[in-house]
Length: 72
Image 1 (cartoon, one colour):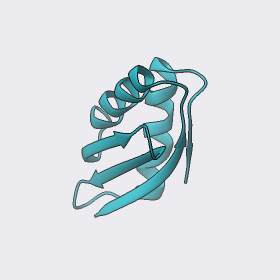
Image 2: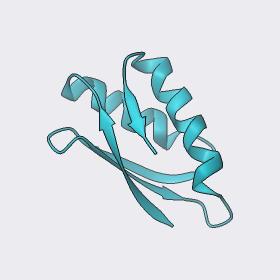
Image 3: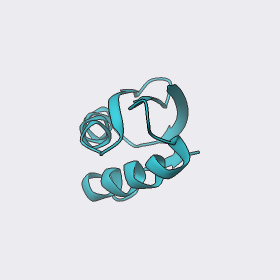
Image 4: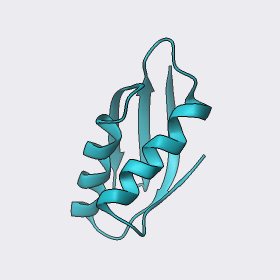
């Protein structure tokens, strides 16, 4: 399952860090961040519920960029 989320991030480098953090989250198959559109696209593992995975994605992203936001 793929979903798109609105994000808030200050710079392109920070967006890259968020992308890597999201990709390293259990339950996430792949993730990409478009800094210009302020969007994060997340592909989840087949057996994962996005509602339970996304709080972990946000937690991991905040470890690398503490003022980022993901709206889900």
